[in-house]
Each structure stands twice: as structure tokens, then as C-alpha cells.
Length: 340
Image (cartoon, rainbow, N blue to C red; front, side, top):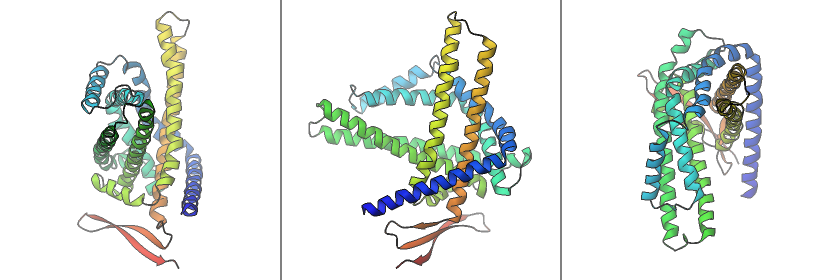
């Protein structure tokens, strides 16, 4: 059993490395298109996400969201002394406030940037704005369904943490600091796993909606089937991109936000150089947003053309998405062969 799991991890790591190398090669092959068209479309979204670091701490939305979330945690009788729930409530409040601030740019420039990349993978040629806008409707409907899926994933994670805490609390372990630390660490792992898998499905669903011209919940169902047996590969592909985006956000915070507050306090900083550096960091952020979409598109193509072997290593399945004349689509798993 351990050898099988080790073999699966090695296979997932190899697949992730291959997909990443192909994605970088494709990005460099179409460097001018991705950096000029796709990155330019993603730039307002990237700038809004980074600039939200200025306004979120001063936003009137943050205190009520944080207070309501803390009230929910207190009503659920989560331990108030746990640093995990304190940090979690604050980070979720920040994320919600930042998402609300960047929502207009997300629904416009972000989706159009993704549409430009998906169109290139779909037709193997650069696209005009009219052809890009034709993919906007399925991407938009899928984005709305993704929002509901992420909301459900967070609710599920909180429910699991709620029942887990009260189950342990029933045995009287909650008074021990060691048990509180153990529960916080376990809760962080469980919450991260649930939300990470939901984000992976949402990213693949956006690519699927553009490739298949079918948005909404159907794209999410397709992505759930496509990702079957490839969860480790998807996680290995998602982690580097998210770490890079988080690093750029931290770079913007320390290079721009902190210096800007110092400038307002009378520090010796040039406003023009500060703004120019902020624009360059935002453009770098948009480049990585484009590269993340390229990786997701390459992963989607790999899932469509690849086969899946079950955990016991006996059967091989091929994924087929069949589109009927009535506009409905059906996801099928075809048994190719049985291994001895």
C-alpha cells in the first residue's frame, strides 16, 4: 500500500513537472501575445488587487465583516483563545473586503484576460477582441457558479471544524492547551485541504467553460470528472503559482504600501518613483496571472487526452465529453482495458 502511494506521488510529481515545462515553453513561444495582450488585459485586475492593500485596512467594510465573522465563531462556541480562529477570521475578512474592492475588475478584465489565453489554446492562433468577447459569457456564468462553490466549501469546512471541536469538547479535552494547539493545527490542515481542492476545481472549470463553450455548473461537473485521479498533480501545479502571487503581494506591501505610509508621514520618498515601481510590480503580477492560466489550460489538455488508472492499478479509463445536438453534454468514463 505504501509502495503504491509512493508510486502515485512520483507519477504526480513527474506529470506536474512535464506540464510545467510545457507551459513555460508555450508561454515563451507566444511571449509577445501573452505579455502584450493577455497581460495588458489582466493589468487593471492585478493593480486593483494590489492597491486594495491601501484601502482594505481603512475600508468601512472590514470592521463589520470582521465583527460579524467573530460573532459567528463565538456563536459556534469556537475557543476564543485559539490563534487559528482569530487569524482565520481576520484573513477571511481581509479577503472578502479585497474581493469586493476588486470585483468590477475581476468580472471584466480578469475574465477577458483568461478568455484571450483560452482562445489561443483552443484555436492555436492569436485572437481579436471580438473572438475573445465571445468566450466571456460562459466564463462569466462559470465564475458565478465558482463563487457559490467556494462559499459552499468554506461552509463545509466550518461545519467540519464545528462538529470536530464539539466532539472533542464532549470528552473534556478542550481545556488542555496541548489539545487546543493540536485542534488548531488539525483545523488549519482540514480547512486548507478543502479550500485548495475547491480552488483547483474552480480554475479548471473556467478553462473548461472556455474550451467547451459551456459555462455554469456543467463546467464544474466536467472539471470534477477531469481531475479524478490527478488531485496531487493539480496541487503540485497550483502551489508554485499561488506562492509566486503571494510573494508579489508581499513585495508590493513592503516596497509600496509601507513606503507610501512613510511618505505621508514625512519620509524622503519620490512619489513618481513610488508610482512607477508600483506599476512594474502590478505588471509582474499580471504576468504571473497569465502564466497561471497557461498552466491550467495545459493541465486541462493533459486531462482530456490522458488516461486514468484506478488506485489498485487494474483499470485504465479514458475521459470523453460527448456533446449532443440538443446542447446537452455528458461526461463519460470509458474502460479501455483491464490490466492483469
